[in-house]
Image (cartoon, rainbow, N blue to C red; front, side, top):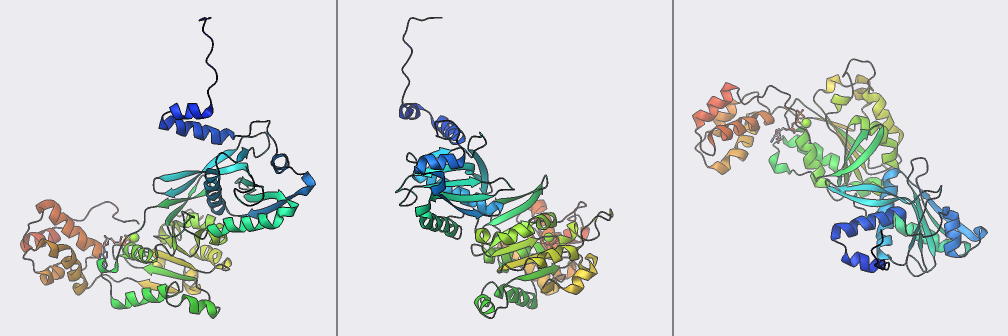
Length: 439
Ligand SMILES: Nc1ncnc2c1ncn2[C@@H]1O[C@H](COP(=O)(O)OP(=O)(O)OP(=O)(O)O)[C@@H](O)[C@H]1O
Ligand SMILES: [Mg+2]
């Protein structure tokens, strides 16, 4: 149907973008990223480099880094930063095989994700990324995992320096995963590393015997005061600690305290044993990405040992020998917690691949009193803490807190000593379902 009007002339990209709403601009940008901005037919990365570097194929040099998946994703994030920094001057091209450039996702916080280049090539003209023109390619397919710089042969040194500079940036604040708390899980046979919230906890909130804290300090010394000395003596700074003890005595709480003390300097990886089995080789290969690492296996006996009766369980010994096999990396602390050390494979205990086993005891009367005081003092009530601690004979730290919680739920901020004793003795603070608490 003709309206008799002349069709509107095509607008410039700037005009379209300036008129668009923010979400539309974001959508257009994503679309642009997906299709790339290389206007001509799809070229292979080599053809792309030949064209943009203005060279013969024989004059091209390739400087490569093959890294594990998380390293590659973080390098991809740095490439994205450079692409944004030089937007307007760069050219994004296809990864070959007639495919458009692809982008992947990197989790950098509990609800924060960034799109990072997955498979593509980017041309950076002279004076952007480096003094000479360079092409950067990335390919995150698991059998490829390559980050490479294509340059003229004459610029190979510069390409090598540029690649080194990218890798050095993995060790700085520009790596959003370093020093964070990460979770490793296995999904459809693939290991996924996601960033989670920081762990909080301080020693004041956890009432433990002095000798336990002394052992914790010895364990931590390989990461703190004795680290350099151990290294200079060639003694290695990897340590493993098994925290054992009955339910509710503060094992998980202690892990949080340790992780909080190492936060920023150590990357914490919370992994179930399945994830550890799958990731261990990668994890040790990722030293550039994670730096010093605290690996936490909370409730190790839930996954290992004598669990489902199917006979298919991996023993702790098998698992720990995997740990043993890849010792070339320094600065790895491993902490596992267990309710029942006896249920763990005896061979593993004998071989004592954990350098330390700390057993957290049930709190004695003095400790129960301190836990009571810590939580009840702020209310300023007339309570006999000493007597309450006696009434709570046999209670774990978790039990003591549960009694207090029940009193607050029933009476609010004002209750009497007798009311608290009545609750403690009634047992109604105990829940019937599994009361395990996880990190
Ligand atoms: N000694 C303690 N001092 C202060 N609080 C404690 C102590 N022991 C346990 N708690 C408190 O009890 C709760 C449960 O502790 P936590 O989850 O660390 O126990 P756990 O030993 O890991 O138990 P589980 O074996 O069931 O996993 C937490 O809120 C913790 O703060
Ligand atoms: Mg626990």
